[in-house]
Image (cartoon, rainbow, N blue to C red; front, side, top):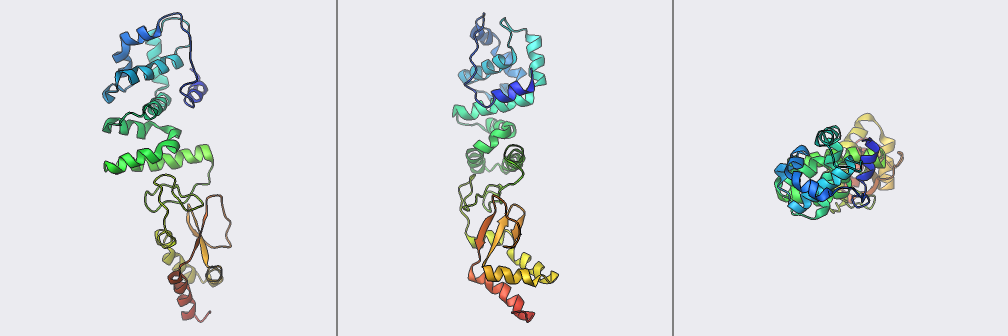
Length: 257
């Protein structure tokens, strides 16, 4: 089966409805457990109704002929497309609304593919509640990967709370919902070290500019000065008085105020 047809199909699970000259439901019922094994989901202990829906979907995608599937040929198609099929299965499990067991959580977290951008918020909450930092780390990596592949190379700044690159320009995280304060953002992005490095490099004009403007830019790569190029998701963070005083103190020590 062509890669495009599987990828396109994963975008909307309810779109395809095929008519077969045989009773596909009965055919699947007779082979439900075997097909679950071939799809590597038997250990998930899915509800029979959901399991059948998933397997029926996969069979309809992989077997376009208007005749009873040949198990050997179907098995080969499953093997060739297993990674993309995992993404479809993960999406179906999530959208079913079923309470996720630990095994299901691991499966959907590692198999969601581009759907991680849609479901990271709910999956993060579940993983956080269960202390699954390992799965959260996997989600963070998948988030960046699929953001770049589907939305472009400009990624948002990192949220200090959940540590996903998911802070929007209004300062709110679209994964955990947190809105960090200016002080928290500056501390998380090592503002003190940034200023120290400016002074050490002798970049006093930039230090003065930041003091004059009263703000810095927070990007996915850290802190930027107001005179540096801005990108879509960069956040303008106004400096609290204590941060302005730090810059002023450095400049006074150098006699540059």
